[in-house]
Image (cartoon, rainbow, N blue to C red; front, side):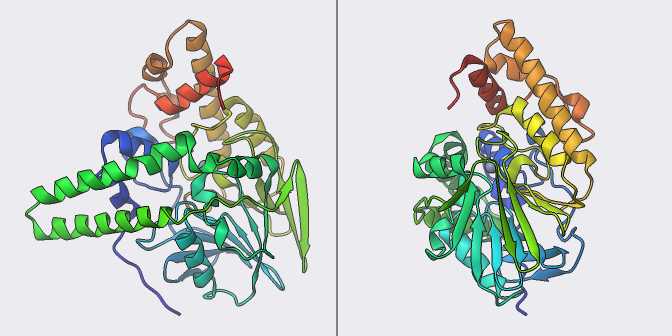
Length: 374
Ligand SMILES: [Zn+2]
């Protein structure tokens, strides 16, 4: 088995960014941790925190959470974006989320050979965000790509390739590269230069890979529920209501007692700029009604502590309630973001040292309240 661990860490992807860039990136990629303290983007447990063996391939680390079900996490300087869930059935494989680019999706398919020879017959997009769906184009036409119907519509309409989340992260990359280049010109320490040069090269490569994306809509949709029976395994796809986006799907493996959640749950606090914060709380109640032992989140390591769902619900509810109150007083979204106090949640989500909420999250809530959200 090939094994390689480069010195790259997600930390590098933020280190040379502006504060604004760090903020946006860290909120979108809660797995991009440790992030700046204001971001709330913490990791949940260390790599390899699943139930079974950890396999190092070229670009991915696979953790066997339960037999035949893996958590795949980027482990090289190839930027992959989200986690993937890998479900190895008797005769085929289901991949949950296709990563951030065709290069990343192809790398996962190559690396899969470290754990199975079975063909990928099924794929899924937990939601339409680019870091979960922009590898779809690499799948052959006979692969069923499953998503909620709203996710298919969003990708078909071009929302995954534009809009707030895309602009916040991808739109910030050229500026980040420029700032890294400027910083490099000022560095004299050889080790620091080498580290920044490696980061810079990874960002340039990543940006070039993004230019290859042709957003490709899923070819199989559900509105509430869809079930696959593959070999001896039942695979359920559930829509529990709007949450992180308008089309979040939870993949539930009842016999394996595993849920694969996309960004409805991540290692720390998820991005909320396309979310429905109040409905998210209700959708998580429906997730909690499922019978499972393991959570494979959209970013970060697998975990078992169900109380972490309660913690996110409490945070979301508090953020929603404070936003609604300030909105009702005629306070602007910007001022509300400065005034909202979420420090009560600091022990559950690292990095909330003082009052203040993510401005993008508060703006989104105000748009929902004003009826201007899209
Ligand atoms: Zn997302």
